[in-house]
Image (tube, rainbow, N blue to C red; front, side):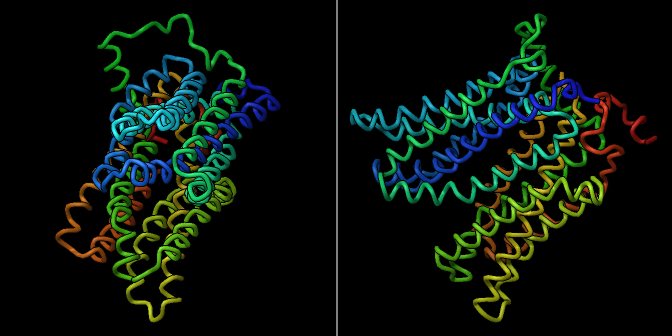
Amino acid sequence: MMRSSLVPASASRRNFGRLWFAQSTSLVGLQTGSVAVPLLAVDVLHADASQVALIGTLSSVPWLVAPVIGTIADRGNRKWLLVVSHFGRALLWLTVPVAYVFDILTLQQLWLVSAMVGLLSVVFAVGYRTFLPTIVLAADLGVANGKMGGTDAAARAIGPAFAGYLIQLIGAVWTVLVQTMASLMAGISTAAIPSNRRTTPGPDRRTPSLTEWWSSIIDGFACVYRVIPLRWLTIGETAYLFFFDVGFAIVVVFFRNTLGLSATMIGVIFSAGSLGGILGATIASRLRARTGFNSTVKAAAILRGLGIAILPLGIFAPSHAVVIAVLIAGRGINACSWSVCEVLTDTYQQTVLPDSHRGSATAAILWLGNGASTLGAAVAAVLVAIISTTALLAAAGIGAAAAGYISLLVNATESPGEAPQHEAARSDDDQERH
């Protein structure tokens, strides 16, 4: 069993509660910022569309260095990586209203803050996935990931609406303070988790040489490749994210221009998707217990792609009400199935990866996925000038569904939460014999 089984059950629940609170508040803050910061750029700094788009681009660029962050997570104190990410983001966001008060706020500052926050968000994403297995009992990882996934979906549903209300009430500049307070509370909650021998660096954790850095990064990718089920899960996820972002980049245009939906109705459709995500995260562990890991993850991987493929069928609906029903069904199926996939794959990954390589391997998976997402959005930007949004969305849906069939190659011989720590070290031949 994993060493996290050495953690007393009561302490495990208490520590997870602190981490869960930190993740929840941090995600609400980030979702609030996803609306507040672009509107601040437009309303206060009079930015044009390209200047606003640069905010999102700069916040995504730090994913390029995710493998380096993963190596740091393997060699350093994972808890304090999270604490630094929370407090660092609080300080960065605080500079925005302070600069506004002194009348020195500029677009360049927003761009710099977005890039630095993006870097700390990478630290957070890698950090919490690698830190969670050190404070939660192995058998409870599935439930813990389900709760984390549920709050992620809830934050996506509540955050933007909450931000819109606050911006109307107090303005975009002061809404940024919500992000500051959320990050500050997350940092305090994470810092309150007691350190143990699995979260504190050992005496042999010296600063690595450049060669050792590269070796650790390569080992992370190699570790993912060696675990055959994880290899196929990662390939399937990477392919899915590429096609998802091809579709997501133009789906609002399809809703608005092709189907003629109002902004309110588009918001309802996306909210339905968020509710589907909450449902999926909630039932993931129960589905796994009932039908097994392999069957559940395969069905969910295929269904999430089919959910996207349903969306362009809205053009054939005989009435406006049927159009809305088709779109809500498609988004709901996609989001629900995606949450199930995410909870199960995160749990499996945390269970089978050796602790010494969990950071670099997790970062490798995230690097591949985010790289595929960025490429998918770029491809959509090029192709939308050549083919219709309907055809492009249909192609994205077919591709996403096809990516799900890669999961049929997954044959995990042990359930998440039960796999021994040495699973990741098995050779391909050993795994194939199982």
